[in-house]
Length: 122
Image 1 (cartoon, rainbow, N blue to C red):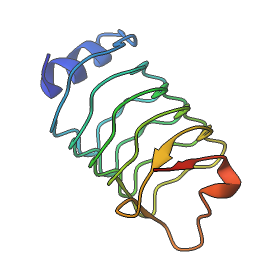
Image 2 (image 1 turned 180 degrees about the horizontal axis):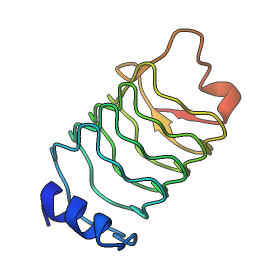
Image 3 (image 1 turned 30 degrees about the vertical axis):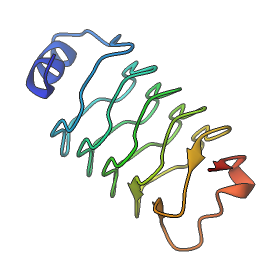
Image 4 (image 1 turned 90 degrees about the horizontal axis):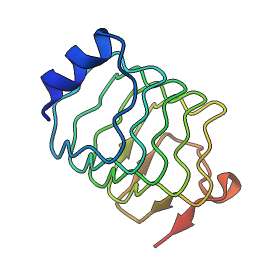
């Protein structure tokens, strides 16, 4: 599956895409609210300004992904891989980040404290 197929299927009403492989997918400004991408491989994907509120990204591989200005409010990112991800200005209100892993190359908005959100540094 590629990014265009995902968007087309989402528009058609499909929401479940567990374990889908979308490495380096271009999903800039994609409307994917409430989508199920549990355990998906989105490494290196560009999700800048994507609308992902309420999405299930639990155990997803988002290593090196660009989530700048993405709306992840209420999203499940439990145990997601966020190493090297760009989360500058991302909306994370009510998002579950417990167990999500990050490293020194992960970029957060100024003032964001990953420890207080129960994230794991690797």
